Image (tube, rainbow, N blue to C red):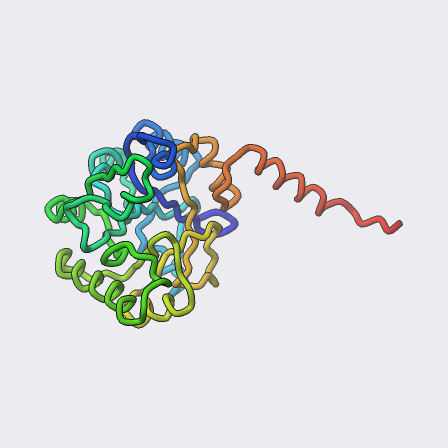
Length: 264
């Protein structure tokens, strides 16, 4: 935990990108490992999602440097490429699963990806193996639909049925939701509460402080093009913009704010 609050990092695939569109969502295994080592060198360490939930709800303590590591969609390469790195560091992490797509591929991206390519998602056996190894699994809805676009009945089914299906698979409570595409509104938030989730994760960047809305938890979006230095700047500022110029603007604005006011 930093002075600004708790950071939640959001990754997707850990594999090679085949075009510029995929580079937003896919980080190479080598760069992912470099990211994790850079965080560790800074004195940071991952904690389970439940630790964040307990901190927000009950004021439980979090040690200095604590952050939460999340992966959306449940790609198979997270198991193949990220899990070994994180096991060496003894860092827990959370994966948000699309319940209707377990064991197949991310068909919802086919229209957006210029190549029309899709990528394999974790199957049930792989998910259960990862759970035994300490990985947390939570809901990313049934079909990865944009929730505000759905009517009330479909919205409820996306949230309730995914939670029920995952609880049946995992044999435990599923308390957390990540909104597909980060799309949400008041109606979606209300439906998530009614569906029984404890909290939900957005894609709005920033630090999470104790007064953050539990159903709008902030996350930093990590891109495949982010160098370790860019990731550190994102973490320092609680932003999705890891460019050096953004850091310079930040310190320039702080410097101006500290200048004494001299009326003319």
